[in-house]
Image (cartoon, rainbow, N blue to C red):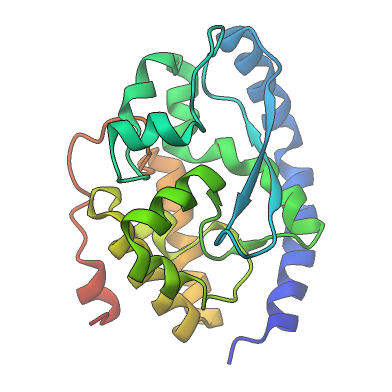
Length: 228
């Protein structure tokens, strides 16, 4: 069993190293985000695993230019467009070119290492979601939402769904992958997820909610991991 104490120890060892090594890159990224968006480069979002669980004030690098009011977290607006909370392509026009690369590489999540250091998150774990998205999930996919309430792992910067998931398959895909991780989590599985995360970062092939994907990832994750 991949114990919580062991996993936390690894988080405590790796997160300061990641912070120190990435500081020069973060400074450059924040400067370019200011130029691209004309706004403060860091945002804070309250996210949860489910509405009933404790929220985390995650730290993200801004990637959306919102000089006009964009109802990104508006429950009514998102519900009107789609019940799939993982597809929000209507906001793509507000993402500057450099910020598109940030989102596709996943580097807009790098500041969440601070959340890991504080013990609020883990490097690897289930994806925390906006409360507005969780409300939609609870309403449109109640069965899967209820299954997510049984997941006890800390939310993660990366994870099974983050690097292997298919957004267009909706909540079912999210829950299947997260339940698999909850049941099978181990050092070996975390290493596989880490290697996949590095590949996604280097190739800028992160599956994004806003930026349109040209094609599916082409990976049979269920076959690869034996998920039924």
